[in-house]
Length: 256
Image (cartoon, rainbow, N blue to C red):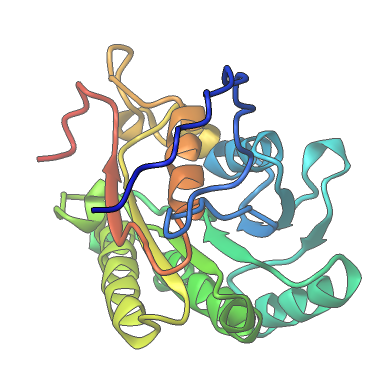
């Protein structure tokens, strides 16, 4: 039989300092880094610029008009796919390549199909769909290198078609389909999220005929809340992603 040795009296423990690092195997939220935001000069895009800054990231805007506050930007018509791609390449050199891209630019042409000119109808598709594709395509080499993230912006009208919105619905249904296919194509390489957004209190509705504006009692989301949801998607750890999220005001009627 072996004999035990006398135990050493324990010393009082000192309070531990909170660790600034995660335990092994604990998912670590990613830093935002440089986030390219299309349509970042107004509406949801402008709210995203503020949200990215607040979260410690560096927003970079692609829009037809310069953003407020001196945010790095390129003035570009996103309906021109070649110009959009060139703007991404130029910004990558001038301000740094993207760690993430959010395609918040969007437009609409309200009215019955036989009342909207061909050019106006196709302009919606050029901006909402082809502009999204052009920017994402141009950013892909950088995003792949960094295992970055893409967030596209669809709509509840990409889930349900409504009258007098054929161009918008077609473009947003297409954005959602494009994003699903892109997520399958880039699985394990780039995080891909589709934001399905309800209506927001933004200038998007300005300039429309009254019949196409939300009523005074419409329950619309604050774009800052929607932007915060996007930041949550952007901060997911590498190897984990929010593939699709539906974000809207509780009382909005556009979905379901």
